[in-house]
Length: 85
Image (cartoon, rainbow, N blue to C red; front, top):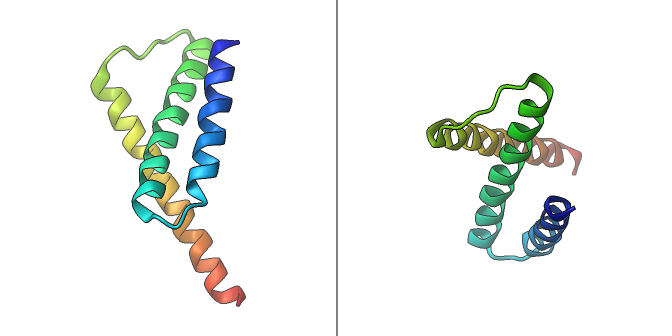
């Protein structure tokens, strides 16, 4: 229950802060979101396959991959919106 409450709190905080006009705050929130999604993914991967990731380097590399994926999705959304107007 505590993990869900932390997720809801950070998700609400990230959502409300991502609507700000400050691009630095928005990027920091995307970095935090990528790390949170990575930790949730590692937890689900461990529960499904009973293989637990314990090295900090692997977690940070996967968080960087997740952040790169978020950047790619934002670019695709920007590209689609560019031609919709």
